Amino acid sequence: MAKDRLITPSYCCILAANFLLYFGFWLLIPVLPFYLSEEFQVSHTTIGVVLSCYTIAALCVRPFSGYLLDTFARKPLYLVAYTVFTAIFAGYMVAGLLSFFILLRIIHGLAFGMVTVGGNTIVIDIMPSSRRGEGLGYYGLTNNTAMSVGPMFGLFLHNGGVSYPVIFAYALGAGILGLIAALLVKTPYKAPVRREPISLDRFILLKGLPAGFSLLLLSIPYGMTTNYVAMYARQIGITAETGFFFTLMAVGMAVSRLFSGRMVDKGRITETIRYGLYLVCICYFCLSACGWLTSWNLTITTYLFFLIALLLGIGFGTMFPAYNTLFVNLAPNSQRGTATSTYLTSWDVGIGIGMLTGGYISEISTFRAAYLFGALLTVVSLFYFRFKASPHFQSNRLR
Image 1 (cartoon, one colour):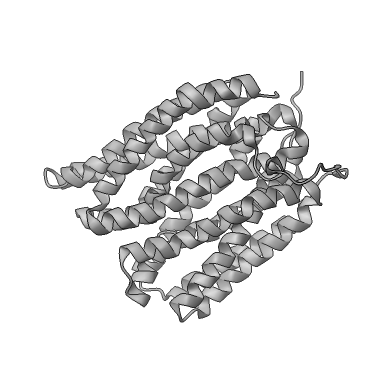
Image 2 (tube, one colour):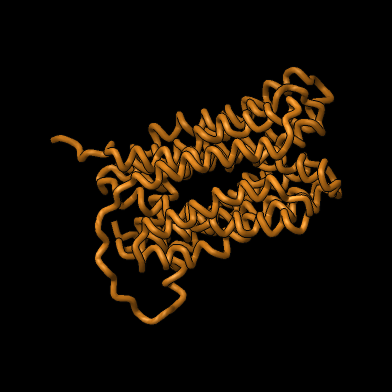
């Protein structure tokens, strides 16, 4: 029996739009801590607070964006959010005051919260349901591909002495190209949905809260990793180009997504998440241990540091399509946007906490202590998913 067609012009366009969106995003992630430190001379704690403004703003808008996307036409909302997201890069180029930069980060986070929920919801709309896990895997792969080249390119520019306004200009160019690709996406007609009176479940998928809490705990160390791993490497004496950490992490995600999406389509959703959790737990304990191992053998520790990046990518890449599908399978079709926003909101809460706690713990202690704390949280996440979130999903799933 022939498979339903997954690869269409619109699907390819939204893949391109997502890649370019995240390329601009990832290009700045490892650069911004240096930017804040060098341009505004602020502490690690302040850096964590400033960077978390972005995530907190995205968190605030995501529950409402899911409701809006389920109520109104999705593509116009997606395009408006994409336009604002792109325009903020131009604002960074002229931000001379820390207060103005913080304001831009908040607006950027609001736009990011809407555009990512919109993209994730639209891609589900334009793919056959029989290949949803596979399709979401490829869609997430565009993020991973951007992650493999964006941070490395950003750090390459920064280490090469390129000015921050020029780095921001590269992100702006990526956003403009992505917006053009987004304009070419054709979405199916969505019939108006009669809404019940406003209630909490219009904004948050209540059945997804147990899985959301597990995901939140998992994303705290992830937030520490994406924002502080370059500073961590410098602190413990690793002199190799840390941009390769992101590249290897993204390669691991890319490889794992190729098979994890198909496992999800076979119905092995919770098993796939557990496999990824086991690997991620081990990796974060090893990442923390690197802070002690450098005094024993710097060369071996450097190799271990980059091996951890690859394995972390495999672990997270295994889980992402499964978690996304889990939330969608708990919701009726009319609440796809709400399911997606709950999934991404859970992730954003953890990322924001990770930025704040990572910066604070490193300020009063060291980054290795921060990553040890993150490793302990992954253990809690694993046990909570195994004994609470997974049974809850099995008893409440709709498909």
